[in-house]
Amino acid sequence: MSEKNTKPDVQLDFTPKTREMFARCEIDDPDQARGATEAEIADMEELLHVTLPTAYREFLLYAGMFEMDGPFVGSDCFLQHLPSLQAWFLEYMAGNPVLHNHEGNWFAFYCHQGYDWAWFYLDDGDNPTVYQYDETMHSSVQKIAKLDDFFTK
Image 1 (spheres, helix red, strand yellow):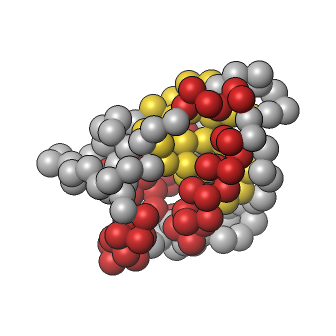
Image 2 (cartoon, helix red, strand yellow):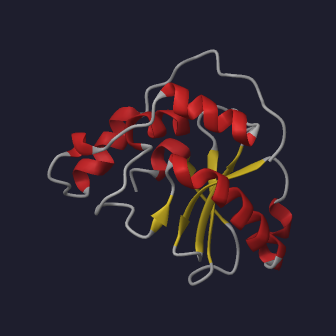
């Protein structure tokens, strides 16, 4: 992670993809997802000294406080997880030679059960490419999707 980058000039709308993902996961009411507020996201950005890309901010606005059975059981990817994820991923990278090429302006936003990680680079625009490493399936880092598609897969 590094210093703040600038806020995007253009507002994108990835929320329909996020709503679609929750609907496909057969949650009785996809509107039960509780989003973070702009103030909560801004506080987190200040705490972490980053500006999050629009696609992730919109996910957080729609479902950033979601904590129940559903598509992310066993996963850390919500607003309250972000500080810990940065520290855990840094530690995970240090102990994993496969990840040494992925240092820099990264931001870990997803971890499932401690072995499946996803991150993006903060300087990769409003809808950055997602990189994923699952130690049970890959011997290398996979470039898997744009961020707005990650949540619908």
